[in-house]
Image (cartoon, rainbow, N blue to C red; front, top):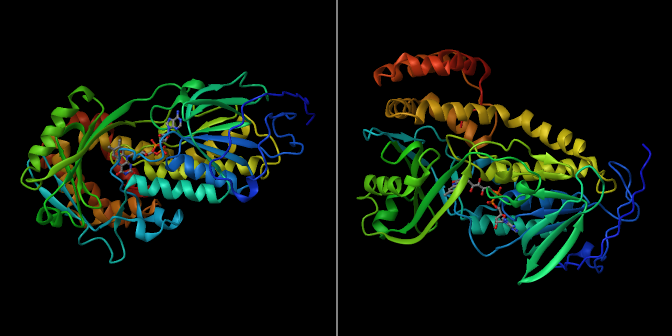
Length: 469
Ligand SMILES: Cc1cc2nc3c(=O)[nH]c(=O)nc-3n(C[C@H](O)[C@H](O)[C@H](O)COP(=O)(O)OP(=O)(O)OC[C@H]3O[C@@H](n4cnc5c(N)ncnc54)[C@H](O)[C@@H]3O)c2cc1C
């Protein structure tokens, strides 16, 4: 393909890396000369990428980019603070992202799910195998580990707030300019492409006009419990459902290193979040009696992917893209996975940082791959949330179903390993019947089931062995 040989010099204040790594000890060039159009070779330099946001999504993207030969800058405004988060990750993430076991605070081997009428089901003690557990991590520990690893793979880490992004024209090959502040001093950096990993309030998403998504609000109190109360939560996490704790989600008590996180979330009644927080505190009041609140935090949780996730040479990953599953509110694994997939896609399309990439490359190598792998999982969990969290009848049925060992095994297989749960056809049929039984017992009337095509859906699930989480 004939290159347009567009030359564009930008005179910018160079941003120096805080920690120089072997391959980046040369002084940074003040200009970025772009003489390439999409997929044409770059002459005498490597592709240069800025990753905005140093959470699991950004660090994983930066690691993959730098390891694959792309000159990579990772921006994080606040590396010393911890993102408000429950910190539960699936077991497969430990191997897949080589997370050292000593960084894990708690090995949760028991989950309780508690219905509006206080029907309690113990989830896991019988079904989890002896080596299986749900790892609970502190985000400050996980994030700092992933950031350090990106650095040791060659990414240049910048503690700075990105304040503005200049995109002259999404269709041209001109550089994009990242304006940022380091210790209140203004800096700029020209790059070939941007990975937006800056979370639910993404600035990068606004720049590419990515469109809005619905968000839940999650509220959480960290409570330090007296030793004997903490002992109860040693390896136990609790999920509460009911109109008193959330009209459309669940509330939780998750054990952390030396305290518990007690929280709840909602999409449809965000203004009342504190009412629901009082609801969960009321439900667990005996269990947290004598506890001291050490931190209160709230943060949006995206509810659906953004209408646009790639534009020009800009791609969104993690929460910025909207990759949090409904039903479980799980986003850490999907953030890290999308960051890594996006980084690897850019490395592949740029042939190890030797060529320019285009919007088509990003869509083909990253977006299409992501959607093929996960779109059904996200849709499935969306449907489950609407069926089971929408009314107390559905919630009672959900808890009752969770007592079924087969449901538990399918759920854990899919959650812990993020792979297709291979079910047994006979057990799948029993599950369908049990689901009907639970709903009938819980007096669900036909209209909701009809509207959601529940029978068809469960039969197709039984046939396809869709992922459960
Ligand atoms: C209360 C709560 C509990 C949760 N519990 C769980 C759970 O138990 N398990 C689970 O899997 N998920 C959980 N989630 C969801 C999970 O926290 C997110 O899905 C995950 O953090 C997404 O990672 P990310 O890297 O995409 O974004 P983030 O973790 O939000 O990281 C974005 C980073 O970008 C930085 N940044 C933003 N703007 C700028 C800028 N302009 N310049 C420089 N840096 C910037 C931020 O400082 C931040 O570090 C929970 C969420 C909430 C709110």
